[in-house]
Length: 255
Image 1: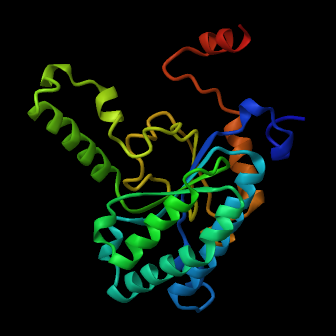
Image 2 (image 1 turned 90 degrees about the horizontal axis):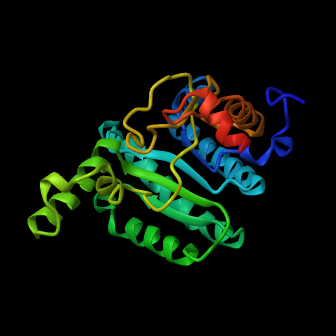
């Protein structure tokens, strides 16, 4: 059976991405197509999140990162932003015990200082409750931007220079990487964006340097196991070279 039409469970272990990152796009358009308010699309999107978390946990994916709210999303209509924050709190309150029971570790990346105190506490409590879990690590990117991430990492390195721990000439990519969000986790192997747009929109700029990209016209509320399988099958067909030649990759693989 070729990887083009293989079931996810039948793929060789090396073909399954350890870390999947997703931009969940299309909630608003999904709602508009049904003459529903945009928030209805966001609520439907939460159901899609439940589904992809469940499937990734079943498959043994190590990390799933979901872009829930970008630092640029604050520019949206104030009412929609408020509803999104309420939905985020409701989802956290309703789901975190279920995630904990399923051995899922929850983490949030992004500048949480802009969130209300109650939401910050919910996030902290969720992280503490699940921190020792050993199954899927679920990362929610909220008030996150790739440029913000690199800026805050650079600021941390600059402070080390100011303290005399490091000279400017000694700075390497590894120093920056050590301060980047998720530096302790494998970088994404597979990036998926739903909704038909083909850009990364300031998401995980540093971390996506060697990630395989997959774009689908499926709107996020309609994202399901079949679309995930299509993305993973596409990933499984690709040769990841990381700067090497194809011949070198095959030699290492067969060694």
